[in-house]
Image (tube, rainbow, N blue to C red; front, side, top):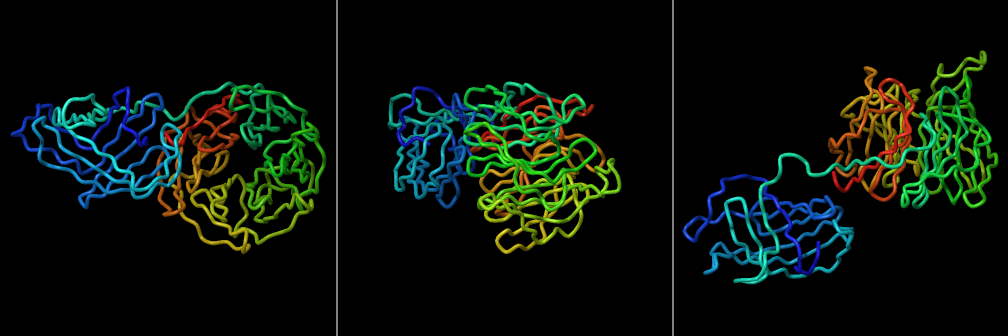
Length: 438
C-alpha cells in the first residue's frame, strides 16, 4: 500500500454488504464503515482489502503485505457532505504489496475525507472540499475479474512422471515417459523469458524419480526404467552441463516422495522391486526413509513411516516435512521432524489424493494440486493447508485436469508441467499459478 495518496487513476473498491443506489444527502443516516472493503489495483489484478473493526482498529492486506493500525472516523459530515477519516499504521510485515513495494514504517498517518455518493458508492478525497477523487468504493462484482492461472510456452517434449527442480529463474525438467518410452531428456525453462532450452540428457533414462538442486547441482534420485525400479543417483553440474554418478539409494525405489531440509535430501517410501524376475515394478511398496548428504555422498537410514506407501508427495515448512496422501494413506497427511528423526500424527485431507499430484509450500501454506482420487478420478482442484492453524482452503482449480505432473515453485508462483489428462494422454502444458491472486 502506498504511503502517498497521489493517484492518477480511480481504484474500484467494494464492500462486503450491499444496498440500494439512493443518493445520500445530509439528512440521510451515514452508513457505517465497519466491515471489510476491497478493491482491485489496476494493472495487477490484485486485491487490497481494508477491515475496519468496531474497536477502531484497521487491518489492510495487499498481496503478501499486512498492515495493522488504528483509525478515527467522524460520523458527522461537513458542509461538503464529507466525513473525516484518519488512521495510523502500527505495524507492517514488510512483505510486497500489489505493486511489489515494501513499506516498513510504523506510525504513518493517513488523513482522508469520505463522501457517500450512494449507499454503495463512497468516494475518498484528500481535502475537506474540492480536489479530485482518490478512491471510488462500489459493489463487488459477482464474478472474479481475474484468474490466478495462466498458460505459458509449452514444453518441447510432452511427458508424464518427470522430475522438476528450480534454481533462481530456471526450471529443470528431467526424464519421464514420452510416447510410450522412458526418456533421459533434460529441458530447462527460463521463467523470465518464457523459453525452453534442451541440455545434456541424463546417464540413465527414468520416470517416477525425484530431483532437487543443492549447491548448484541437480540430483536425480531413483525411479524406474522399463519394468525395473532403480537405485541409482546422478548429479548434473549446472555450470558445466555434465552428468556424474553418485552414491545409490539403499534400495531401488520409484514414485517415492522426497524433500530437502538443511541441504540434505530426504526420501520416503515408494515402490521397490521384489527381485523375483525382471517384471517386478509396482508390486511392493515400502515404508523406509533415508537421507542423502550431498557433501559426503552418503545415504543414511532414518525412522520409517508407519505403513508402506507410494505415490505420496511432500513439502518442508518450518523444520517439518509434511508427507501427504499416497496409495495407502490417501485420506491423510503425516509430519516428519528431520531434526529429531521422529514422526507425529498429521490430519485429514479435504479430497483423497492417491497418486500423481503435486505438493509444494509457499511460506506457511502447503498447496496440493491435481492427481488421482481413491475412486480413480483425475483432478484439477487445488487445496491449501495453513500449517500455522491447520485450516484448509479451496483455491482456484488448474486450467485443466491432470495427473503425473511435475511442479516447481519460485517465490509466490507455482509452475505445473506436463503430466497426463483424463484420457491418459501425455501433456506438454505449462501452467503458472500466482498464489497472491487467490
